[in-house]
Amino acid sequence: MLDGVFLYGRKCNATGDYPADLDASGGHTTTTQYTDGLEEYHYHIINEIYSTTGSYLAFAGPYQGY
Image (cartoon, rainbow, N blue to C red):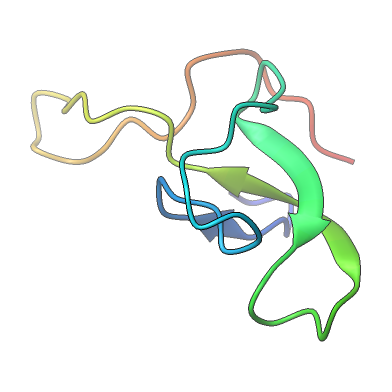
């Protein structure tokens, strides 16, 4: 998350459903509620697994970023 790319919840604003086109880092390029119709690369939380500290594990794969 330090790469400056936004992280959104599990559902995609562009489709209203769970995205099916995520890359290995849990990201894809679509519109968001904040991009005024422009497509932008962003991440989604892709699971509900918790760490031992009770926080979400946001990514399941290697970092892709910019």
